[in-house]
Image 1 (cartoon, rainbow, N blue to C red):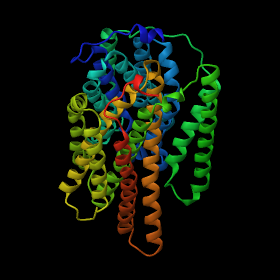
Image 2: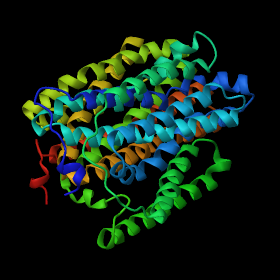
Image 3: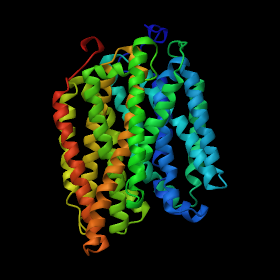
Image 4: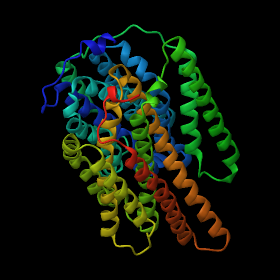
Length: 478
């Protein structure tokens, strides 16, 4: 067993270790930035004189970098101490934020976002690995409920927070506001942070790192291009196929390294049935969440005429409810296990998305708010148990690899959800416009069909949830 795990301290039951609290706070701050720029696209187009397609890259590049960097975090986190990993991640994030705030050109802004994302990519695996190492099994649900605030609520709140900040002035304020907060979190974090275990000396297979970057990065990039028009459909499909092919080669390389050396991403984690099932529900859940995050602002702003601020305020209660329920859901998991939470959560997710298939030009805003809140509450009831259950099914030395796989597939699911709903909506709307329908009614019909597809996919989580055990330990897995 690795030294980092052998020497780990354990927390007292009922208390959240300080190191985990610090990592949760830092992770919330950095992950918030993943969706912070969604509402800033018009400002960027005007200020930096770029097209809408180019401006979208401030979000696409962030997600792309996350997908490319997270696969190597399992190796990275085994080589450094907790304090070193934290210092490097937050230092890189602060550098990227400063670069973005002062960017004189769009190219520099894009570079800043890529640097920001590289730091962000380390934080979630660092948090998950540390939590699983220091928190006793009987208390993990409660602590993981707090983690839900960082990894699920932060991206949900990003558009709402940016809508509020943009009312005050330039898009640069989005970075200026984050910079001092991240700086204070980094300073106090380093003062209070304790190391969990000792780093291990291990080599990295650079061909695996290159394949992971090309494969996962290429797949996310290709998926992000869907919906930009038929003219780009051929190259887009080619990029997706190339990314998928690189991932296939990467998988074969990891299977070989598992027999002869140290794999970059240990795929033996997928042999633990509970982890694999939890991973499937997490991917579908993030697909549904990110898909709705794309569709609802389009519906509310383009078809209903709301401002970004009004849209953010309408959708904010759902995100806040998700965060506030996280700790409660975690305590319920510790007491009752996963099934009493994940099954109702999966059903609620399906009912919410099914409700959105009935959107119209006159749907009352309270219904939109209620359906969105139901979706967020359902996801809260789902995410905390499956993260805890899935990671708990792994042996301790697999934690870094498990969190790396979870983080990577989370980004792929987010990109796939975005690509899926945009493609379905655009294809349906384009077909109706060609048949002579008005643009607004065609887009509305496209949104309805996109929500139908999301509902059908979400229904699969009910089946998978029924297969989950209420609890799992590494020793119980084959």
